[in-house]
Amino acid sequence: MKKCSGASFLFFLLLPLFPAHSADVGFALGHSANNTTTYRFSVQQPWGLSWFESDSGRLTGYWTAAYTYWESKHTVNTHSLSASPVLTYEFGASDANCVPFIEAGIGVMWFSRDKVENRNLGSKFNFENRIGFGVRLYERHVVGVQALHYSNAGSNHHNDGIESYNINYRYLF
Image 1 (tube, helix red, strand yellow):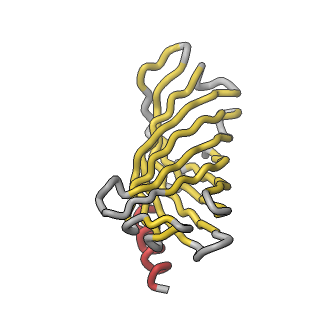
Image 2 (cartoon, rainbow, N blue to C red; image 1 turned 180 degrees about the vertical axis):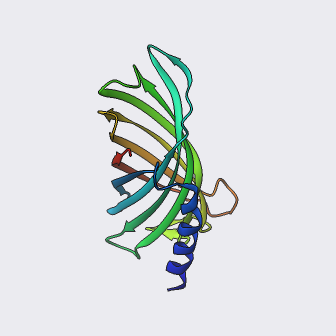
Image 3 (cartoon, rainbow, N blue to C red; image 1 turned 90 degrees about the horizontal axis):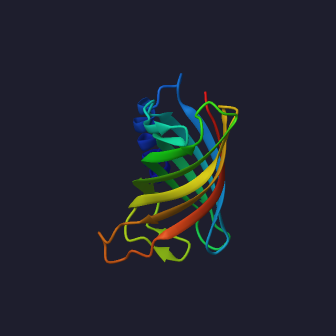
């Protein structure tokens, strides 16, 4: 029970960073090695800024905080919390009905255990690297695919790392 209370504390500590009136919500279903399914719930806060805006696109981004449940068929299930800034390049006009994009980000992740599946992460604290692509539809719906990699960046002698590949949906308020 201590692990869940620590994860809950961290989640509620990060929650004020995302005002409810302008936060987006997301859900993702993913897969990792050894038949582990990931279920991810996230809250995003758009930056409200854009750079290099032109007819061909613009650079923008968002902050994200997420809870992920790692359901393993062979080992103990795991919980994780993450926070990350994400850069997004949108192709075409930002007010079009269909706007394709690519995204990338590096953030932090806390796992409820230092082993996921047969991977020894070396610590409960890890870094989250992401790359993805997708499309924003009718200014409110985002559908995409992401590859997420977690590792401690060599801060511990155990650093097996783990990846999760997911499809995701976000609703933009």
